[in-house]
Structures are given as structure tokens and as C-alpha cells.
Amino acid sequence: MNTHNQDQQLPISRNSMPRLKLVDFSLRLSVIPLTLASLWLTVTDNGDNPDYGSIKFLNFVGLKYMVTVAAIAAVYAIFAAISHWFGSLISKVWVFFVSDQVMAYLMVTSGAGGGE
Image 1 (spheres, helix red, strand yellow):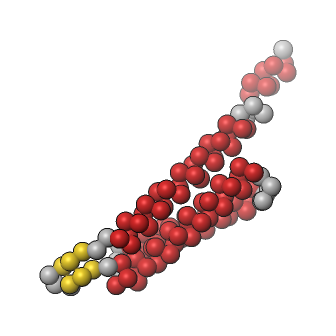
Image 2 (cartoon, helix red, strand yellow):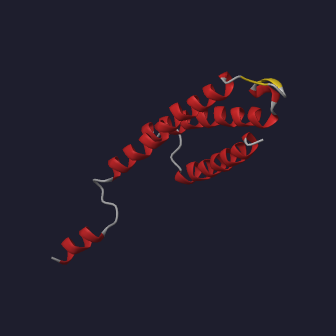
Image 3 (cartoon, one colour):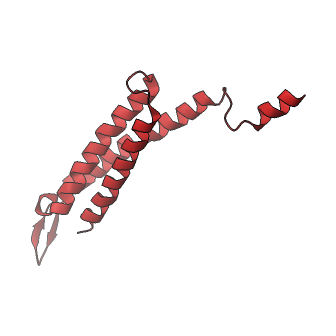
């Protein structure tokens, strides 16, 4: 009876690991279309302003930086999703933790740059 209570107190059981892997894979996979949509909207959006004339993303350094970081994020998300699903490319969890942190900081700085 004591071993039964210990099994119920474990936060992650062996059966829930594939579910956790599926959730992680799904979240990483959902980043790809959102990032590509952000790229598409930023690159294709053109506006005319009576004061400034034609406005394109190429006219702003911050938007160029934002597009570059979004492209890097899309490539990283594809690589991370494939690596998580197959598991043979990178098996160290800390590599993805550090990479995720770097990508998060880059996305924050690109958002600040896009606010230019």
C-alpha cells in the first residue's frame, strides 16, 4: 500500500512523458506558421503617407532587424521541432533551454526595434 501512494505522488509518470513530448512538439510547431505570417505581413505591407511618401520595411532599420530575427526564429523552430520529435539530433535538454532563452531575448529586442 505504501508503494501505491508513492506512485501517485510522482509529478510526472512514465506514461505522461510521450504526452509532454507531444505538447512540446506541438508548441514548437505552432511557432512556425505564426513566425512566417509575421514575416509575410511585415515584408508585404506597403503604405503611403503624405508626409513621408512610400513606406516599406526596407526604409526602417528596426523592421529589417525584426524580419531577420523572425526568419532566424522560424528556422530555429523547425530545427527544434525536428530534434524533439526524433530525439537523435540533440539529446541535451539544457541546449534547448539556453537556445530558447536566446531566441526569447532576440524576439524581445526585435519587438522593441520594430516599434521604431
